[in-house]
Length: 205
Image (cartoon, rainbow, N blue to C red):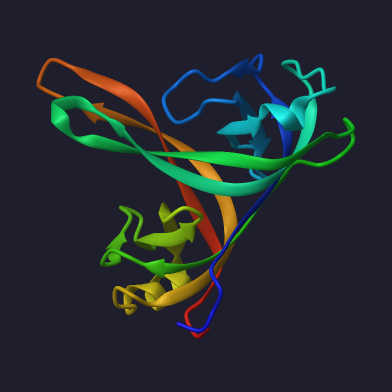
């Protein structure tokens, strides 16, 4: 593996709830808030952003503020139901600043990572081809981020042939998607999934 792994995200959107200190295990010293970013289609992605308190000193962040964010996408396992863990995806910011109301929304992701799970190639009911892939990207202190991505059309075909261990680069956006999780015949709940939607993919790096 000759390519250096990369994990970069740039966002511009609207803070849609009051930022607050995060007291969850593993998130100490962070300020957290949801950020809404509109796609060209009009669909709105709502992403969870965590910012070190030191970066927010002097900023009076409130709901409705327009901000620019730079950082990386991170993952963390969180205990779920029936003893099974859930993969939580969020944005860890290393830069934040206010943006003007006339600045367009932005959601740009650049990744270079290792395929760590066999890609899943499938078709939608309308016949569109999709490939789901999980990328591993190392971070300091021996930890790794495990990031789910989805590719369409030609990119889906290209990824479907990649074995585990292949290093790929990907450019796209981080998106949110609602779905219904069925726990039993009488109980289900709405959840939000987060994934990187690939616009371009390179498997020859």
